Length: 314
Ligand SMILES: [Zn+2]
Image (tube, rainbow, N blue to C red; front, top):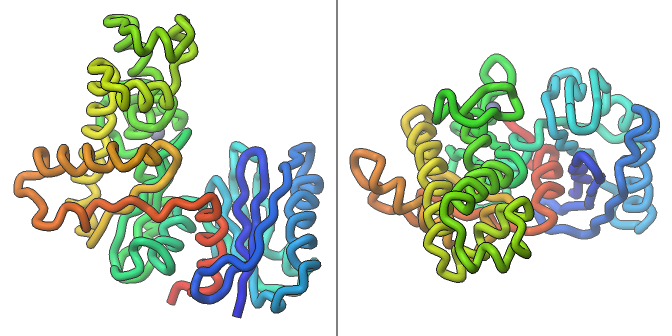
């Protein structure tokens, strides 16, 4: 059995054929042409057509991960701000075209499901997944099921950790995302560098603090810049607070971190573990296993989407 996983982003569509063990047989991608619902659907179908033309075993179903809210039962992308979708019946449209059944999910939930089905949470029944990049997405698996609550549960990035803090994309001040996602790290980095300029930051930003990004913070911290190390330490502290809240609410077996910001040679994840051990009343007896790094691959979004249909939720 194989499935197609479609990972929809703000600027591109990535898709792949995945086997029932989560192995990738083929992948392809195309830019998302966002002129209308029709052009966006064509962007998706372009990639799927090319995959089907490669002649792999005919896929049994299609899983779709969307950066927004979905109605899973109706197969509808309800709202995806980055792509400009409103109430798009994506599952029906793809079924009409390819004769394959489909499942749609929010991309954070799909990512969590992928980690549960095939990834670093394979040995568990309960996990929390966070992906830290330009935002913080996430999902929660409890007793082998995605936690949805009355709708969009699992938005770990929008846990309020610092009321009155920086303005988040969702309109609230002080969400975890506003502090610990890439742009939030950059903002704190700029503040710190303005107060205490260092030669390393000056060199990495060509003397212009406006060039400072979360990557600058990472690289300067790696070079031993104490100011940027403090910024990284603060990022870890906010994320550890998020972990502590998730632990109290869901008692997961593990918390899995993915996303570009985490790809720094394992330093941030170790700082999160250290902060967690300080903040959580009693230290976790097996912190390395409790707070884990996702097996990061450029295709993890595709595998997560395909996991929706290859290991369907009971
Ligand atoms: Zn928010």
